[in-house]
Length: 417
Image: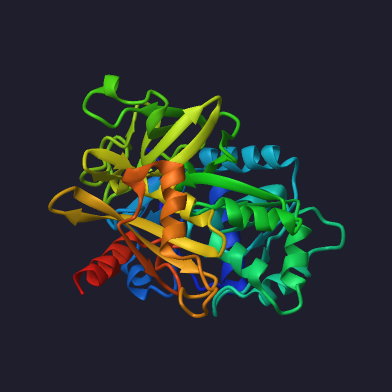
């Protein structure tokens, strides 16, 4: 079996480092250069440790390091064919080729895809320097580097979108964002209120769902990209007791990864999965860890299967609780988790970020009754949070994903006091 070298490419968020990565990706996709493993230069231990294998099967072009939601390191092997299929399907869904702006960490699959879409479209990407973090003013300046009249696209996480909309400087970033042909928003759930604010500002928002194992986003606004398949598998022991439209999300199609790359791979070239992941890739599909509902050709992601809260025998999806909380005026962020309880097994608890801290003024709000009422009306009594805690921000991991483990520890600590 033919092989190719795997090259580690550290990136630090600077345009210069990203340009080097873009060139390496171009060579990897065309077959002219080694396969590429992008890593953050801010994590020197990873960058210095070297790749999980010195060579990979010849059809693997990019390896993405990811811990998913489990914290267990994995290396996802992506073929040139799958990456091309993803880029071309995105271009078709968005209505044609355009110029791309990178605002995301280039070592994550969403950032890699922005660079590859630009490379395959034959147009050099514009890169926002994020070494000091994402800044709306920097976004506006980077947008200004596009040629006049160019159709442009970008990809953001919800936190970045909120920062642009909240920017009170001179409105330059909001004005710049409204000029994009499409703004892909993924990495975490986009609440309806934030989307409505963006669209009111003239922003063309497209929500994306996917992961490293599917070359990034493969379902846009609930509809799979061309060729992508969506299936639902029951999560309970008895499929007859479950809603046939709701269960574990199973994805397939041309954007699927080749598998996981451990320290070595099997002699026949089949990639082996880390412990506990051997069933994730089988039968030409990827079994995600997400709970979803598939109806009328549209996917609604309800949260992680492992995040489900079982309270008094009723299952509650934390993402549904969060969506209900975010409908309350003044709520800017929410994260719901399950806490152990001797009577109910688990109870729902939530961390909430509001425009102003509750109690800062007599008319500040919303109060706890309003929050609980919103959840009760939307999801029923079992979903109502027994504990509500206000915070200045929701802890995050990765790019925009809520850190539920940290939220749970904080809420448990509050409950214990």
